[in-house]
Length: 166
Image 1 (tube, rainbow, N blue to C red):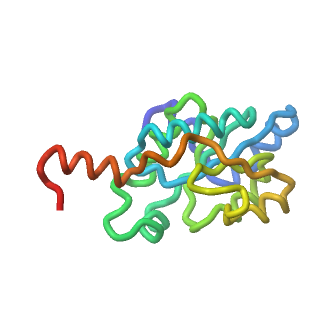
Image 2 (image 1 turned 45 degrees about the horizontal axis):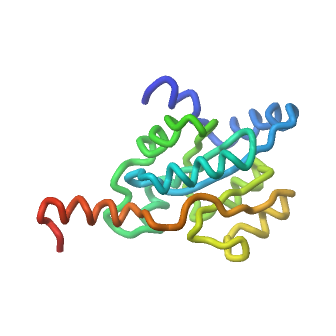
Image 3 (image 1 turned 135 degrees about the vertical axis):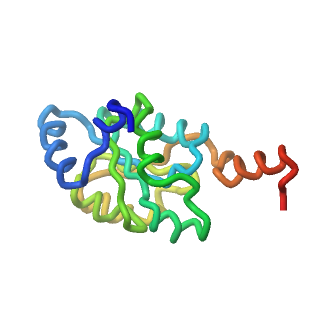
């Protein structure tokens, strides 16, 4: 992992401590989360939209077992540490953590972000963690472009281009 990316990766407990100073400096903390398997422009636009909602963007990347549980056998294509490194390389991202739960409720409770950003495949009223976000004093926002991009679509285009479609 590059030095710059490694410097952004933190375990949850260490990040919670670090965010006390961020909060003391009156900076708005934003949490975004996702699998980020085969990152594409939709991921970039989602994270840029999340970053625009505050001053300090934390991104929670689903661990491998969690990604497999959510996406199915054969996923993720890239291991969590590599997906986290790619996300950390984006200039709009301040910190990254890897987590194994199927939702970010425990992360919301530990980090208490001001904003929880979700992609446009959600609406504010159907975000699974919206009640926990409210419980910790945060607000839920929907950011990014319309859900016109997906890892599955990228993979399908690659397979089609090489005559390997099923």
